[in-house]
Amino acid sequence: MDDFQLTFQQITSLKALHRLQRDRRFADRIKAVVLLGSGWTVTQVAEVLLVDEKTIRLCNHSTKAVFRNVCFLPILACVLSAKKNRCGLLSG
Image 1 (cartoon, rainbow, N blue to C red):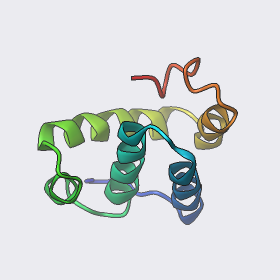
Image 2: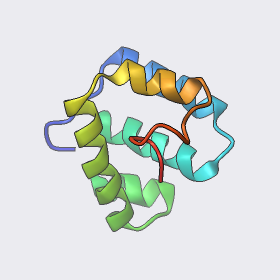
Image 3: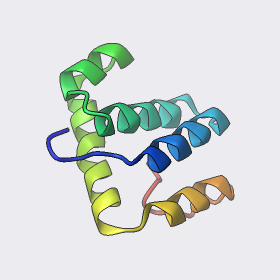
Image 4: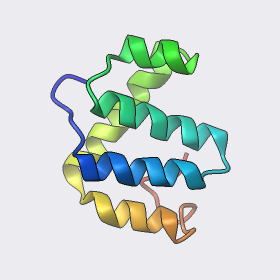
């Protein structure tokens, strides 16, 4: 994902969040974020998750906005506290 990299702590937190997810679509989004933040290309992620590249590009765009404009940990706390439906950044 061009200049987007996740820290070890962010990847670890996202993996923990992934394990808690019951919603498969949200879990797939988390997997896409981890892979993109680990240096995988959009094409590679789309292939491994068996989804359209457009879907990954949309995830890519949204992810960049979240990780560049707000602090990561409050978003994670929002989801972990079961308030994800109220958290506008993660709905959809």
